[in-house]
View 1 (tube, one colour):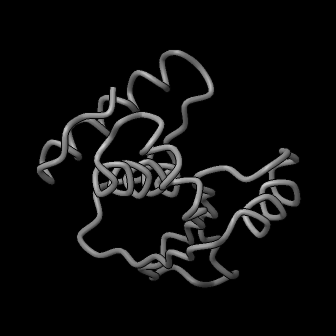
View 2 (cartoon, rainbow, N blue to C red):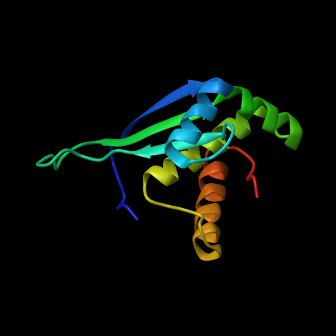
View 3 (cartoon, one colour):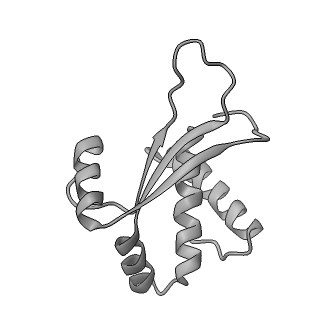
Length: 120
């Protein structure tokens, strides 16, 4: 995982369902929109000092629908997806049980620190 950062920059792009589905298909081979996509920054050769960690793409209508379906406060669901996406940008993943447990623990800790209920 990335070391502790004191500065970081990222962009967050909000998209609709069709664009979310297109990006998911193009970059992940998935079908339909997904709630958040993370694109880690890959520095150019010779660039060693950069605060940019990457880009997040969030499908706004899907976030609203998921929050409603889960009975979750909308702001809390937005916060969860941003935290989840940023952890991906920092190198965390949930492709196996051990990684998922670590990532979910970090998400809970960060969300509670921001004043949101833990999602898990």
